[in-house]
Length: 148
Image 1 (cartoon, rainbow, N blue to C red):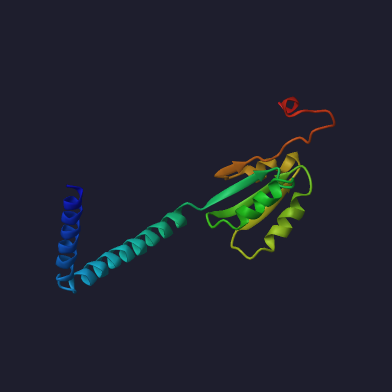
Image 2 (cartoon, rainbow, N blue to C red):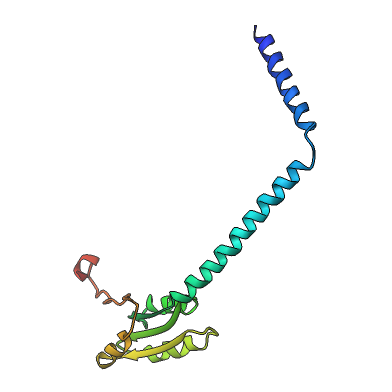
């Protein structure tokens, strides 16, 4: 019984393979070409749509704590981000130096450094996004719970 079943399956597979070989050869490439052109047209239309989305979603971003160990690399990453147009860096000290360093990177993003309490309002004016990586360094014997 099992041998008959296997032989029947083999025969059916052979018939289907032979039937596929007798198909006209032009149909498969035409389908593949039309599917490929459909994918290409979708890609180009999505690129065009993303270009308009990119142009309308450019923003001013402020980093409060930009001179610290997290703020500096974060500012570098944002300087390379195509969705940012203005980058405002704020910290209690050393921020103008960080802004000067970042301004040497060849992108169209404008970078400004602000330091001290009197310039905080200027740094936040017109911002669409404010990121605060600033913190207080732990003193000897402090735990993470002591910071809150």
